[in-house]
Image 1 (tube, rainbow, N blue to C red):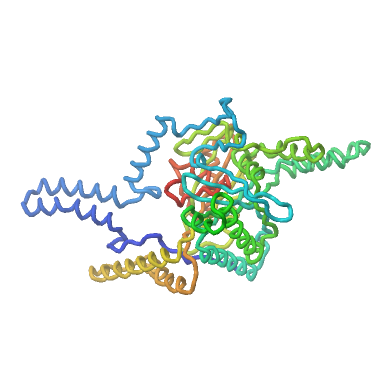
Image 2 (image 1 turned 30 degrees about the vertical axis):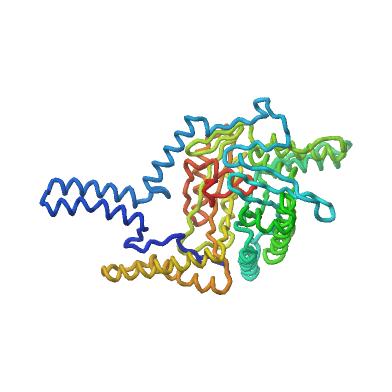
Length: 503
């Protein structure tokens, strides 16, 4: 038994013929007026010329090319070219230039430049200070937790259904709080570096043991390390300042007041993660832990050195194993049209298109399997949550647009396609779910592959696309936005593609 999720529809349904939106239909209608005027005046040559112009305008306005219209590509390409000429797409850290005066100051590129990390008040038995992430550009506050989940590969249908209901309950609970407007799940798989095993062998190996046994253990370690991967999973809750600022007035205002409100939301989310979703561990990251997660996101190979430093600190408390925020980012980064370059690594990101037949629970697992040495795979699954008022308004608007479009097609005696009928049925069923208290969300996923600069990143990008297709989805390369896609799908700092200030 498999669990299939197929209750989704277009974010916007056009009620004009052929699914056109209002502005598209207006541009097409205006472009046809010179044609009819020329026909009225019997200016046949002018009518033919205007018809060609009208066809060109219609194609440019209506036909999407790899997810964008031609006008969208022109605007995006122009902005990218201007940013490249002005040097806005190139990043050099202050530490690389010898200008890092404050090691606690965050120095990150691109859409992460507006990030500031605050330490929350002590909480729990260990009095840990959870890292509060403030994004000045997007005006949001976030908190990230490292989670451990047993997976669903060996689970039966009942367990998968229970976890699916747990995820739905998590989104409904976040919607009812009217604070959290987005929940981000980020998963990274990296090749096993063997750092922990090296430390274990150094502590337990007998130097007077047989040399043959040592050779066998070393060969086993080499083979198993090359065939193994390590998985890291994070969940991030995002709260906009417009909501958090009002709630913080009752908790003391300022950063501490906002932290207390976030702590209450974190407790609710943690309870649901351990309950319905079946997570065995949920640990909200402190500032040093978040800095390590950020650094290993930009440079996967640095993890082995960090593990060695942590082990050395356990033996000598005077040692320093922390990664300062001034060094948590890359020393240099460049946004290229089709990939993102950071330090000694290149990354390619792609989003996925949800299939009409639905997505099986756990279908993204094949995307995480690396196909080459030194390769790192990761993906982000984002759940933007609409407020109940906005969800009800958009549901009513979509239902009205669906009914209007169906009436226009019947008036024009146009046959309704199966795809259009399925979309209309989904829109009509959505209103009933909202009335029963369900949350409206528009989930999306971004997948990223990272490889060393010594190999061709284009080849790894093609392998990523092949993995997405094997999982049952259609890949869409996020050209001209590779830097934002990387920040969203690799670095757990609450960046997403939902807000216009970040995309």
